[in-house]
Length: 570
Image (cartoon, rainbow, N blue to C red; front, side, top):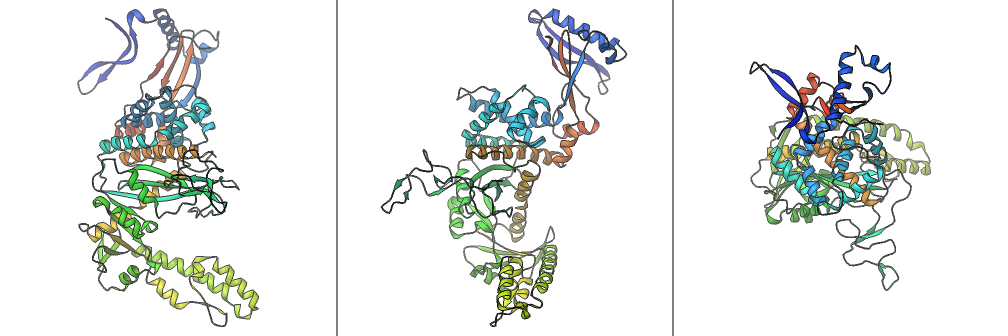
């Protein structure tokens, strides 16, 4: 059995001999179009023999080769290699095999993920990007309808896909999942109206068959919750915005991240969902992921007694932030305990205080953060002094109005004192109390084997989640969300998570930022040529910088001849 291949000799400096390198495999000799290949060879020969390509184009356009276009390739090439290495392509096709959907859905999903990482845009614009502005391996033309259908299917398999992606990622990177960091953010929508309320279960998803009119009437004529429903709310709803846009509807998004910053899963909830109960659902969703014993690390919004009891189930552990300004018995007792701080890494000092038989409490102090807190407080006090100066001469009504204005600014109102006679003063006692808290935060944990230093440094790594949110919003353009349907919004968040997973692996492996890597790789392009014998695509030679990136990622550069066809194009 014989095969026809396009090959050239390449010198091997180590072996000190030339070796044959196959550029393209045409297939079995008896099955190839020999006439088409001969025409292609003739066209290539004209290009090689001519001084310039332009000289060939001076004659009949049907003779010789014509240059059609050039598209960026490097970014999509690297992302696709990681996509395949993580087995996301095989996992997706396996899940597709249970349905009647075409296997091309996997390529469409990858294209949407690559779009978020390389050129974030709406799904309508993403289709145009795929068709005209980038080369996606294994994908030709795509419609916006195909993008929307792929998103709809993605949401159906989200849980299975997330579990299998985590397993392959943990195996590839040898992840240490002893600590899992969890935090939430919100993203708002530029619309004046929130979504119509629907009955939802405890995970925030609509109960089956839920509509704005669903639910029986109770004895007083009000709506009665259907089976499994716990509250009635829209998905895009008004709530406490972490982007300081309480005037706009929003959704709440949660993310679990490893200590090295690898995002393992995301969740979405209605915009008026409070943080407190979310971590319990997250723990339940990851219960069957075959994880070893995990210590959950979360911020102050998740430190309720019910959450702590829930996280301790089956021997689970936690490190949670505690609000020093809450006035709780624990915070007051911890701050009142004497003791020396111990210097640890990362400009941090810690001291452990004994105030409970069942939990451990650690006060962490960051001198640099303390200086920043003091500076910000001085600026606030300067502003407050300017506001209240001369207020004694104002009328009672005008003074009350000024007090009302200051009360809307928590940073200023914290230091305002109103005398028995209604005069406005700067509160010296409040200033002294706040100064004692500069640069400090309180941690509580049920872990007996972690040192105070490990607890403080572990909690400090919660910044990895904040970095994830920042990259999602600034690099991957989580917002604006060009969708109004709940399922499409949820699918959009999942696409952003998959893109963040790929770029975080690239950053971890290369030691460089994604912005720098993307900028360099996108200069690696592929050109398309056509002639009477057919078309072919040829890549630009990788630069030394591009080769270094690909070598660090253990990715082979694209072949010189990316695609070779024997049929002429129109």
